Image (cartoon, rainbow, N blue to C red):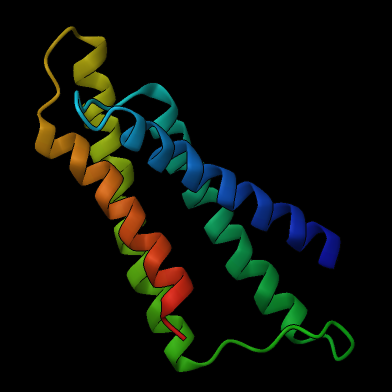
Length: 126
């Protein structure tokens, strides 16, 4: 089961890279690309799966996974809310780009910046 957990963590990181990478690459001419939306959906799906896996694995004595405490639930809730906002912004930006409309720099930077904030929360908040 820990192999599955590792694979899902890998996919979660790939999802983050799919959002932040294009944002940094297009910093001078900001837009929202289709892979950023795909990355946001990957982040949401794998994040939900990770919470479920950690909950199950923490109940197994030999898994080595620590149980979720109140502080971690708060952190995960904050990350989930940010991820939903990133997904919504990426959806709107991708839809505008497909329609031939200009994606505002604020929208593009909102997608990338909030995704980067989510990465910071994941790594810094203990």
